[in-house]
Length: 71
Image 1 (spheres, rainbow, N blue to C red):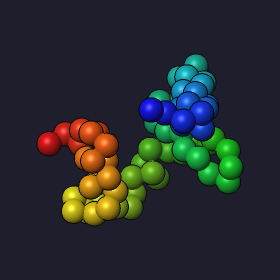
Image 2: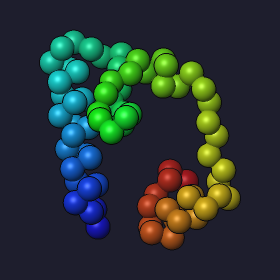
Image 3: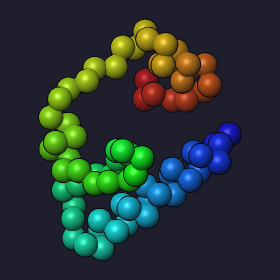
Image 4: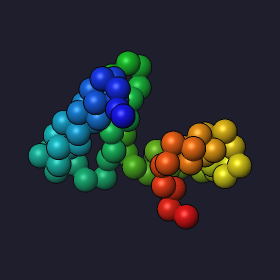
């Protein structure tokens, strides 16, 4: 079940994403930086590849919570 912080963060990201669309900024994504929601170019966000360890703790935790990871 989402916590109040989860709901607030999701709402803030949603508002910022809609604002980007209203401003015709389709090549950006929202992120959390320095205690605020900001937008960054998508190319910048994916410039450094960060592999997820399928045997790692976060993946095991997600699966234990019933979160589907597409497999």
